Length: 107
Image (cartoon, rainbow, N blue to C red; front, top):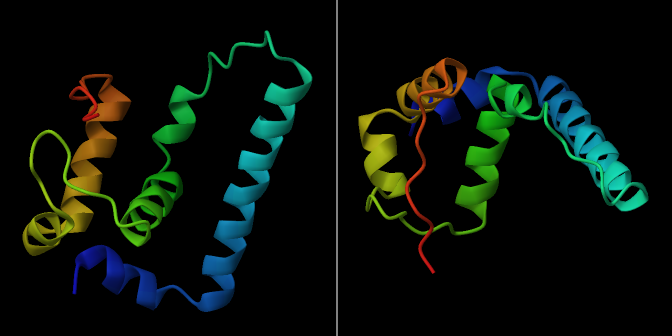
């Protein structure tokens, strides 16, 4: 079991549901804003993707969706074997330091 899963199990269900609802409300607000104001540019979203709850939520969403390895070849199993929590913490540090450089998308 990965560290992120262990952390998930230690957080009470009510708190996890509250966090999920907060993230969904945030997503809905962004969606509605984009629909109403098609020319609006979301310049200040970068700080949102750095939030720990957003990163963990994204991890579980991609994993549940059967996300495949990226261009770097890392699988969920590999990352979990080496520590998903540490992986996400490193990603968060890189995002906050603005040193994260995403690889090209596989098509």
